[in-house]
Image 1 (cartoon, rainbow, N blue to C red):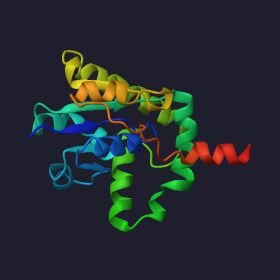
Image 2 (image 1 turned 120 degrees about the vertical axis):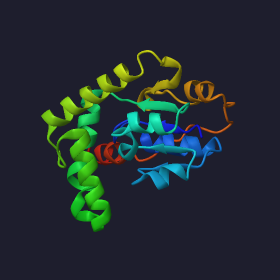
Image 3 (image 1 turned 180 degrees about the vertical axis):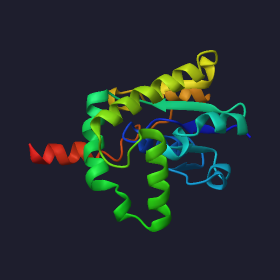
Image 4 (image 1 turned 135 degrees about the horizontal axis):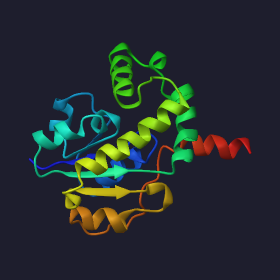
Amino acid sequence: MNKIFGIGLSRTGTTSLHYALMLLGYSSVHMPMDLAEIDGHDASSDTGVSYRFEELDQLYQGSKFILTVRNLEEWLQSCEFHFNHRITPEKLPFKHAKFLTEVRTKLYGTVSYEPVMLREAYQRHMQRVENYFAHRPQDLLVLNICTGDSWNKLCPFLGRPIPDTPFPHVNRTFETKLSKST
């Protein structure tokens, strides 16, 4: 079965992509923890998918992949709040904390906010995706939701009509916190 995979890193618009896919009529899961969750949905996104996109491509041949990106410096700022305050293993039930620790370690080399390691991980992930899809550009869409990419890029890629509703912009925790403090 063909699937849609959002393979961007945390804080790149993966939640917005998840909601956009649902608005387009897809059954979508954000941050799936196992293959059963992925198998039970049309679309999956976030780090539970991005660390294993090559494996998913082999399991679900013919699928589409969407790499959400954002400005590296803005991404690091958003990660600082996210990693230090919002989503930490200590705040989660054991099963989720264990999974978060495993995924962050695989993707970033750290569970906490380490800007040098995160910067390198971001660049490494972008290069990994670019290399993997170098000969299959039709299977990969790069989407920068933070700069305005929306239905105009997503819908043609998926072969869907553009809906008559605004593109969702959700989970702006850092930006909301920042605007309240200035």
